[in-house]
Each structure stands twice: as structure tokens, then as C-alpha cells.
Image 1 (cartoon, rainbow, N blue to C red):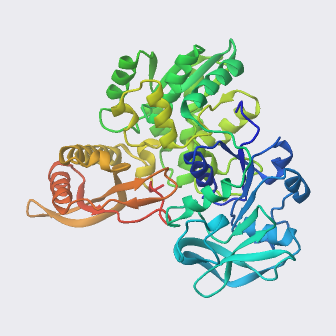
Image 2 (cartoon, one colour):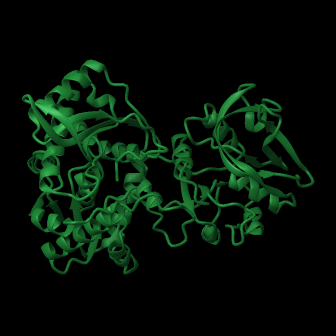
Image 3 (tube, rainbow, N blue to C red):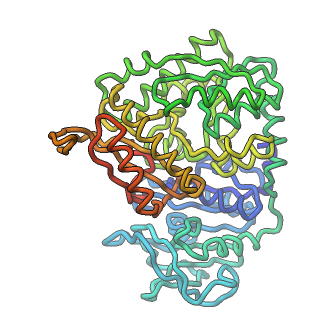
Length: 508
């Protein structure tokens, strides 16, 4: 980023919600960036600092730490969230003790006073807890500014502008979390603003400076992220070749649709048909992480085979990809799943300075806003997200042509019915997948023994949390009847009513 001063520095202790803090701060109009604890020395002069939550315990040997003297030298507001609060309490002379049980889920927040951090917050407000340690003794000069319904301290304040909270204000389950974050940021004297138009201009400048005269290979899938990236490179005027790989894991008629969309936008793409190569590489493999790594590595091989000695690789990597993959060597996060753009081969190229990821600082909705600022049509920007590994992550177990055909046909029926009923744009993402279990059924008065199809439709803001959509029963009935009558190889249709967490959006 060009702007480095007066941003909100979020120190990442490994919480899967950390990037949501960055997102919320941007929603409030301010620039925020994520740092590891070890990178605190790289922060020039922040406007405010937020210490995130994390999966570790402060009592563990080697638990993540902070250079507290460096933190205090900034002389800016500091907010510790969960692990961050416990760490601040220890650093200021207090103690923390392990709890007998982990507290996870909704709880009541009861501020001592409706001022300062809790100005305008209700006398009792729902917040989302996620912790195992508990503050024991408070440091001298520390005071409790909020408790839970049982009187246990859940928010502390040290001095004028250092705060701690034992809950996650960044998640929507904390009903007044946005207000609390706004109140915290109001203590800052100067904060860098965040505007998508300014951000676009900075990205273009950085792309030109980074790429220079070198050639860039940009992998496009037709999805929002890679489409915006391709158009961004086009606007930057760099020497880019956009490669679309038909890996045999696409939805029905997707290759034709992608080619037509790019033609309309005036961006030239080259199509490489590598379906046989991908399916051969996946043959016999059932482990989800291995399948993802096979696909991610093969993508790079296909790119390089297609373009020869290309000097750089451009990827539409987003913040959630980086966080869930925990691919930063210094990351404190647990690996949830390896995204295709974070496999070892990509990381090796990254270490050589051959990877450019202009969107890695953004969330999905911000990418859409960026795309809109460049004139990309609404119907392209609001296509439902499609995973990099394609239908492979919707096909648990071994990937075969038979299974893929069932998924494609079922998915096409589901999506077309959602559009017909006016529900497509009400869903953040929807798809049909395959459950790798055969079940007994009856077709044409004869016994059938075929696969079960799973339907999933969710609403989300950024893919980090999601809720299932309560689709009309008649819509589901129509989809089910069509799939059972029109798709060969399946005799049962199920609707997934799992939230994220604990379930992920995709099956693998």
C-alpha cells in the first residue's frame, strides 16, 4: 500500500475472525492493514492499534507476544480483543488464568457506564464470546468497564485510551460491535481514510511499478476475483496474457460463458483445454487437502506450459484465501483449508518475487466495488462465487467424470430455478454438490442404487461466516423433482442447513 501512516494496524494472533476486524474498520471509512506480532517494527506511525483474538493460551510456553514498549511508543489508542485483552493485562502487570471450560457463543454485555468505549451502547447487549483463558488479577490503574450477566469482567481500560474486550465486536453476532469499534476509533487523533476509488488508483500505480516491462500471466476463471484482476491489469496497461484453463471441473457451459463475458469487456483471453490432464492427476485421490494441492500445482504447470518463460504470475487472491490457508510463515492462524492459490508451488514463486496479488488486501464485496468502479457489468460482478478447485470441492472422495456430470446437471437445474423464482440474487452463493454415498431408491418400479445430491444456498458478507437460506418449500420441491427425473445417477436430494462455523461453505 502507498499509504502507511495513520492506518489502523491490526495485530494478528491467529483468530479466524481477524480479517473481519480489518473489514469493519474499512466499513467505518478508515484504512486498516494486518500485521503479525513480529512485524510491529515495520509499522511506521499508526493511527490506532488493535490486538486480535487467537487460538492459543497466554499461559502456553512460546505463546505469541508483543513488543509492549514499541506498542506504547506509538502513543495511539489500543484495543485488545480476547487474546489481545489477556495479553495487555499481563503486559501491564496483571495475571490471567486458564479456565476449566471454553466459553463460546452469545453472552450479555453490561457496560458500567454508557460513555467512552460504550457510548450509545444498550444497558444489555448481545456479544459473541470465544475464549478459554480468564483475566484473574488486574494491574494497578486498570478498571473494569463492562461485565457479563454473571458479573464477570469482560472489558477493561488502562489509562485514557487502552482498552480490552473479552468478545468479538467484528462478528455480526455481537449486535452493537460496530458501535463499539466506532467509539474506539473516535479516540484516535488522525486516521487514514479508505476509499475504493483512491484504492484503485494506488493499485494501478503499484502494478505498473512492480511489473515494469515484464510479462504477466493472469489466470482467469470467469469468477469475480480473477475477472476484476484481469480488467485491472488491462487498465494498468501492463504486458499481460490472460489464460483461461478449462480444467474439466467447471459448471455446465461455463467455458463458453466466460469467453463471451471477456469478449464483451474487451479483454483478450486464451483458452487452454486441460480437462484430461486434471482428471488424470486426480484419479484415485480422495484426501481433500491433497486434491486441492494437486489442482493448485497443476494450474501453475498449465500456465507455464502455455506461456513459456513468463516472468510473473498474477492471481486474484483475496484476504480470506490468505487467512484460511495460514500461508504466511509467521501466521498464528490454524489452517482451515489450502486454497489453490496458496499451494507450495505458488509460495515458491512468491519467494522468488514472481507472484503479484493486487487484490490480496480486499474482501469479496470490496472487489465487487472495485470492479464496478472500472465499469464491469453487474451480472458479472454478482455471479455467485466459484471455488478455484472447481467442482472437485463439491465432489467428496474420488473425482470421476460420472460424478462431475451429476453435479453439473443438478447444479444447472438448481441455479436456473433460483433465477426463475427470483432467489438467485438473494443468495450469496448456491450450488449442488454430491454426497459420496449411494442410497436405495425406486425408479420405474425397479430398485435403484444411486448417489445423493446435496443443495446448498447461503447468505454471507465475506465468506468468513455464513447462514443457510430459508428457500420456499415449493422451490425446493421443484428443484428436487427435476433433479430426480432429469439427472441420471442420483435418486435422493438433500438440503444443507448448516451454518459457518462450524461447517465450511464448500464440502471440501
